[in-house]
Length: 189
Image 1 (spheres, helix red, strand yellow):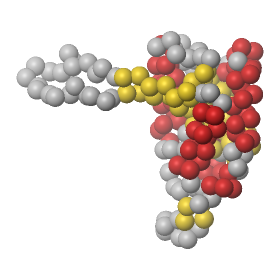
Image 2 (tube, one colour):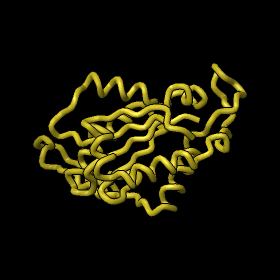
Image 3 (tube, rainbow, N blue to C red):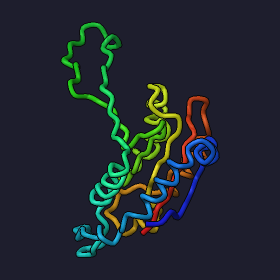
Image 4 (cartoon, helix red, strand yellow):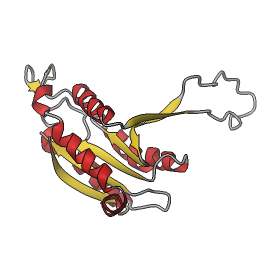
């Protein structure tokens, strides 16, 4: 695969290149290693493209997971203890939420990486909420978000988010004091 787009959020590219250059090089190598053509395995049942061979987002995700884990990047999960003191008086609940957690796809040397072949809302959540949470938990200092570009997405099932969407959203939203530096990489076949 190739990197077809780069977007620096809150100076992400400059910070990552200056302080985490080896991690960035490795992420770039992982992207180059994944052969997208091996994952054109899904036969569409959608009305707009019946029978067309599409890229499989779950298979692409598994390929990235394999590559990151082979290089020593770790999945990082934290247990959630949801507060109950905010319920109104008289509300009874069993909201102990056993098994609730938040996780980051890959973490190493204070760099967090998310690979997103999912729905649109998850891209912005990753950058504007999850990466900030993991920074506040003292797990990461910077983030890298890997998402497909629009031209790649048209060869997948409908509903997959893409690079151009997150760039537009982040530019319209602006940067907040709590945000951390993030490099968004748009990938293509």
